[in-house]
Length: 67
Image (cartoon, rainbow, N blue to C red; front, side, top):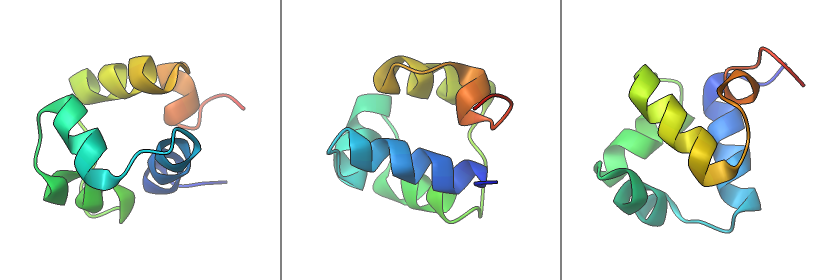
């Protein structure tokens, strides 16, 4: 099973977004995206919702609750 960080990275790459591009869409620093993808920190629920919208998937998918 993919970690939350792996899932975010996978979805970001599928959308052909760089970390800085995703950071800009979420209005966070580049480091925040790196921390998420490396499982150093986890995004707050509001960011999980925004990620779901950006990637056109459910929040449950991002969190690994559904396949």
